[in-house]
Length: 114
Image (cartoon, rainbow, N blue to C red; front, side, top):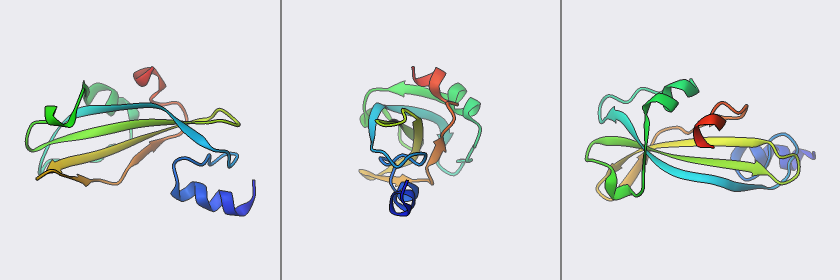
């Protein structure tokens, strides 16, 4: 992989970090979290999210003051590696206030989303 693609892969989710190939979205779903405003705690362990995320259909299903999480899985077209991104946010006045995304690169969330 050339150095330009390696740098790009650090900033773009649709470029494979392993080989530099193009990634496509293979799963996307919105979930409700069990955390409320003022009580958000970041967790790095996939098992926490597996136990505390509840599938919802649309943003209007999120109660006021409750965090939500968008899960997106990217799959590389070349080497077929997966990357799962958790985008945690709090809806505030028709906007979304995002926390730092959490990434799982080693299949930690595969049994949850498939």
